[in-house]
Length: 351
Ligand SMILES: *Cc1c(COP(=O)(O)O)cnc(C)c1O
View: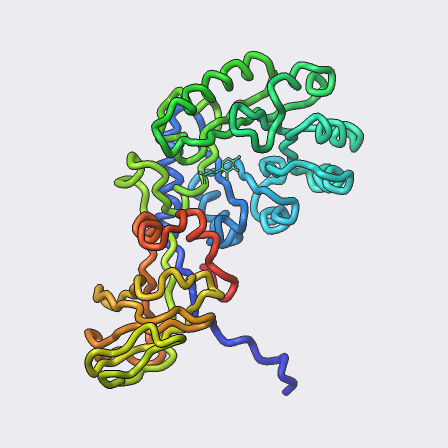
């Protein structure tokens, strides 16, 4: 038989998604959004968890509005949800982007007068707009609204984005007040301001539609969410080799770990190329039947060593869970919860 008749064997690295927790997180955020509906930010492959796996779960939970950043992220969603409910946050940069949006029926989020012009030249149609209320990132300035270009738009949803909703700072109220003014200036079918953290800021911030991302995936965007949001992403890895080492033996690149006593170690199939960055060296841990097995020495590109002295029946081929609780992982590594999710690499099988 030719070699390509054989399927590729399963990966030694998998990202287990807790579907119940994912659905429950969306329902929690939708309930917390009060009279507004919660949509879902599924950009960056659903924050690295896999849009093709995540979207059907959220859709069955009741989610109807979807946000991606790039046009290249649309095709994964098209077989799963109605195109008219997909909004592309970066908007059209070229005529080809605008033509694509019209051809497949997704909505661009227009961020500037030049994008509004492109959209009009392509024939226009339902669109969203993003208005900057104090973040100086993407979006129309408020003084650009009200001209003939924006007046002619068919606006499905008018958005703005909060810069500091994860903090208790005056900027939140300032952006809220600015967005209320925008609502008076711009006619749209719906208005939307809050991301995950913004939902926890209270009813004033909810308007008609909220746009959670991080909290859907188990991230704790604000303390109010800590007790109601559940962990969704469970990275798991196979043990490649088990070995017994003696006092004085060195482990890994640059021998940053030297055994003080005889011990048993395991080499697992995850490394920095998978997003398990070197900042986990000597700090991370894996779980086996509730026993925590510490990472020792440096994380390599494809491998990591762990101390399995307290799990002496651990065997090659066993599966272990990488401890990856978002808040704690962020504290240990200094990375943001967003980075921790989106880092998880393509060698993880997802599902
Ligand atoms: C990414 C993004 C969101 C989601 O933000 P989270 O903090 O992950 O909830 C919402 N709105 C916009 C415009 C975004 O870019």
